[in-house]
Image (cartoon, rainbow, N blue to C red; front, side, top):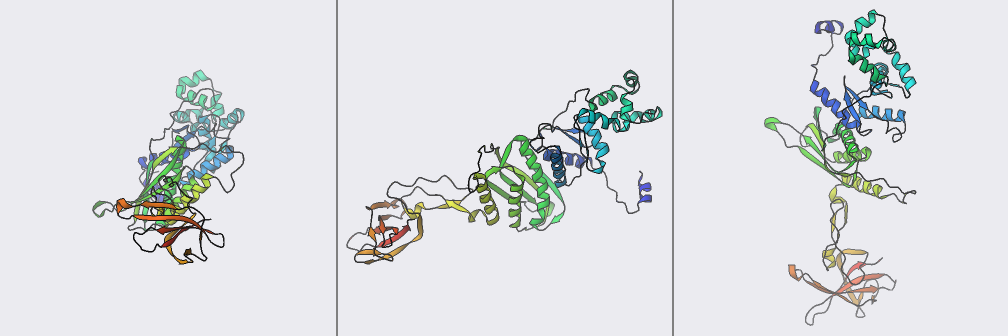
Length: 439
């Protein structure tokens, strides 16, 4: 309609210029998200995506569940869809354009059902027949079934070969060829926010849209992500502010949307924005091949390795990388120097323990000086040596030299302790210290 006619019917109507570039970008975003259901996906005319799901039905639990998941995925992107399912792509497109207006969609799973449903549709649904719609109405042809029964030679001379080809493709009488959409080699998606966001938790909805696209990209390449980088963009121009990067490092590569979304939610809850956010971008900075699922018949007690890694990642996202540590022994004979801790997601390979007597399970943060009773070290009771001495003499190269004789001692309650005696020169009395406790 013209602008004046539209305002006459709806005075409060809002007018917007059509943005073809944004429409193409939205269709591309939807295609990236739907790649998780099938790698055979193609773009068709009139903002339509065609998906070959013949090999995905068993994986996703049948046609009904798959249609619900596709509709749910599109809803996560802020889109509404009209679905049509048929043995041929042209027939599925026609069913979506007609019966899909109610939102439920039409499904034809067999060729007889396809023929019955397609015969009822209007001829003008086919783009090749719209130029001849007036002539078809004049001869009383008001359905595709009537159009199909017209003489082919006469129909070809009147309407041309494209109309017959479209009819044959819809009824499965001619092959259909498509240019499948190929996922880009790297994933980096960006979205402009409708308004300035001042709280990080309010960014979760927009971040979820980018995450859905990344899941489709990962599934298309059979990849799993190891590190995610979320960029929070602020003001541009003369008052430009550098973007705020949010790095999420996973202990084990993953491609599950629920787990990645949980990590993003925890990280955003800990961020305090220094300036309003006007756009966000999401990139998969480190990816690797998707791990093959476990083929064991019985689940492991206490959860499997993936469950343990997800717990570590969740704690790291909630508490911070410096709060979740793991032991990282160093190559040093001195116990206080060899006992080191590192973030669990960045820990390097642990050095082997030095050969010698057994090491205690608990090493004290600081050695405790012991008193002497009956010429023996005392800790709750007089301690009795139950092992030969182990001499440790190291640290002379960095100015922290130690010379100690370590023993395993036993108390009257049969508890075992790790104690040492400092070797002092001259006539000075030796001092005893408690370094650790055995289990």
